[in-house]
Amino acid sequence: MRKFFILPAVLLLVLVLHNNVWAMCVNSEDYSKNANAERSKLLDADIESYYSLIEESLHHRTVSLELFEVFQKDLKQNHYLSATNLNQFKQAIKTHLELRDRLYSIVRARECWLTTSPFSLKKFTSKPNDSAQEMKLTGIMLSLSAALNLYDNYLLIVAMFQEENALRRIIDEPDKGFGLSSNQLLDAGLAFNSVINREKVKYAIKYYQKRIDQYLPIGEVAPLTQDSKKNNLLYLESLIEQSPSYHVLKTNSTLSFLQKKIQFYTIASSDSLIKLEKEGVNLLSLVFGNTVGLVETRKGKLYQKESIHNDLLQNLQAGDILLEKTPFRLTDQFIPGYWGHAAVWIGNEKELKALGLWDNPLVKPWQKKIRKGHSIVEALRSGVELDPLSHFMNIDDMVVLRDRQMSKEQLREVIINAFRQLGKSYDFNFDISTSDRIVCSELVYVTYLHIEWPTQRTMGRYTISPDHIAEKVKGDTLSVINLYLHGSEVESNHNQMLIETLLN
Image 1 (cartoon, helix red, strand yellow):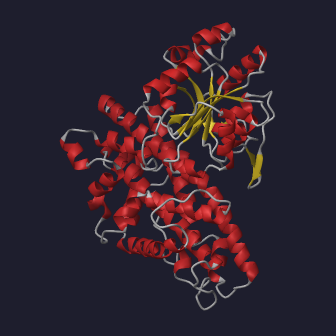
Image 2: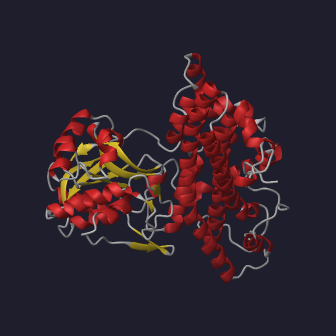
Image 3: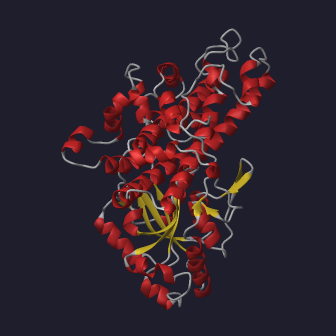
């Protein structure tokens, strides 16, 4: 019977492991350099794929909560789900199961590293900086992070659907068309509330707390380095520390986790849930608003700065490229380089009419939004959208780039190419060779076809980063129009200041 929710990290060794993982754990007497090199190689590959897996998981939370609100309205109005909503619900359940399985495999791959001897102190030194011990810590943190992520998913998604009777019945109904079996929630609840499983997670937490300060600065988030292994530790540490489940588990006994739900939501939000409930705030709205907040530690320094917003609206022209930096967002911290996101400014109604594009079949469906100020095409985790500048401004740093040598015909092509991307899905694999899914910097890559962009081969695929786009300032292909660093406008030496950000 397939489980709707992950069994937590570091489970009993009697659980069935993947063949290659089982070999890693069982062959505990093989302490050769080759064996360690293979472990390290597999660990690096798993962490690389984990980046995109976490992105998908965060996106799934947001989509699930949006659907929950739609389903509630449907049930209130019709007392049943429409056929369209029912199909969406089944697809969401299937997606959740697939994510659960992938995260589960990450948990299981190194759950035995805590209790078996591949890293026995008899064979490895226990010096703080010993590479084998650092590898062990990284593997355990990866397993722990995946388990905590799914604990969070349970309380932010599953528990909410579980409390709605009609939706709960749908989840527990089998559906061969979607490959769903029955009693999904029963299995999820048993695994989630298992005292034994929770104790094992707490054991992993204690190991992490005891060891992490030996490898990373105490009480601070260190910047990215050239050391990929150190960067992996930084990434996993951030995921663990920003998990509400982690803060509940590390401080509480093994009483039922559901009894701690109020405390969980209090940690997940910046305000007291109890106080908000007394004031009549809808629980769904609170949790939905903080789904992103769980990985966003504050608002950006340019957020709701009206004077800057108005200045930008005066200066921006159709075809401009926008780059931004949001160091307060968890996943953006680990995008290679300084800049973390890229977007394209398609202009307003007047500009599009001057270019002869206002009535173009690709533009016409978006005319109402454009008239309301939606002029930024950007690839977000929810897909490629047309957004207003105000939506973009929850940032610390921003640069506006312009190709001054671009002909009118090239500009027309750029704008049309940007509209062609709207509605596409986000590319969680960051692969520029795919055309049906787009990542933010790839949006620029497929839009400005007359520019030869630098790319980089990573883990068997070619990618382009926002820093690669900024590098075009060096050869005068692009010019800096506006630059804001740390919330303040840079008024001179724009190009040089931008180039310096690329050297950091």
